[in-house]
Length: 288
Image (cartoon, rainbow, N blue to C red; front, side, top):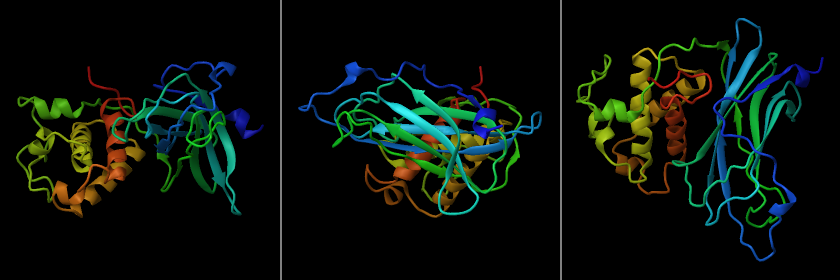
C-alpha cells in the first residue's frame, strides 16, 4: 500500500478550517502586496501501540507588510531522502484556511499552526516543508506565492513521551510570589550572564528585545519541566539551543542590541510559548 494512503493526518489545536479561497478573491492590478515570513519545527517519536512514527510540530507565520493577507493556504509535507540530491514528498495535508495574517505581525506575535501525522517509519534524512502561499504577496498579485520554511530532523527517534504533568505560562511563575519554584531553581539566582536574576528577567518588559522574549519563555519551560511536565524532543532541542545562547552571551542589550536583532531567539521564544500555553503538539496541556 502506498505510504501516502497509510498515513493518518491528524490536525490538533489548529485554527478552524474554512474553504479554499474563491474566485471572489481576485485582486485588482492597482492593489499593493504584502510580504510573508514563516518558520517551522519538526518532532518525531515512536508510537508504541502501533509501531508508527508521529511527525509533529508547528508552522509560525507573520506578515511583515502593511496590509492583511488574502487567500492563505499551507501545503505541508513530510519528506525523506535516502539517496541522491532530492527529497521525496511522503505524508501530506493541505490546510485551506480562511485565516488572515494581520499586517505588522512579527515573530513574537506570529500565528501558529500545529500539525501532527501518524505514519510508517521513514528511512534516510527526514524533513518537513510548509509551502505557505497567499494571493497578495508583493510582486505576485493573484499568483499564489510565499515562503517555504523547512526543518530537518536530527537525532534518534525515541518513544513518544507520556502526556505527564501540565504546564503554566510565565505569568504564573513570575507574578505569583506565593508559588514555590521547583528545585534547583531560585527567583534570586543570577540568570546566566545577564546581570539580572531569574525574577528580574520575568519582571522586565521585553520592549521587542529578543533576549527577554526568549528569556521569559525559557524560564517558564524549565520550571514546567522541573515540576514534572513532559517535554517533547523538539522543545528540548529549543531549550538546549536557548541555554547555549544565554551561556555564550552577556547582558540583554549586548546580546540583542536592536529591535530587529535576535530573530532566531524570538522564534525560539514563540515555540516555547506554545509549549507553555499547552498547545504544542505532543506536549502536556495547560494546568487547570
